[in-house]
Length: 174
Image 1 (cartoon, rainbow, N blue to C red):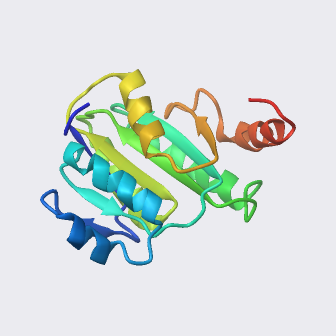
Image 2: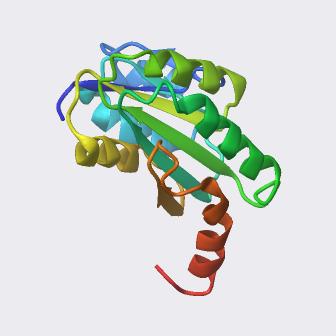
């Protein structure tokens, strides 16, 4: 993907310019997981901007590629929030990665607003449309969870099935 996307975790992060040096990253990353920080140090050449999030062990990551989904994103966010405050409430540390695949309809603005409302949400913005599979790959590369669930933004698969997927995984299913 090259340097065509950047990670954005605005609520709890600290900005790191693309021309940082390792010494500066060490200072900025004080209190961060060194493996996670070094991963982004290695990857920093691929990003225009990187926002580091303080390390917390993440058990579940939900990856959602987004392309021109502004009309459905408010409903997606409401459904995810309902599941987060209901069946997944306090069950596991998690993150939700929304990958904007070059949307032209205001999807990115909605993603930023959601990231600001809820620090569990992380936005990744690709510089142009690369396609669903590469957007998913960008989200998977960003994911920190021990378990990863991918879903589409159009709610083809409702967030209500996520607790069932977690339960199946814990019973040994992939």
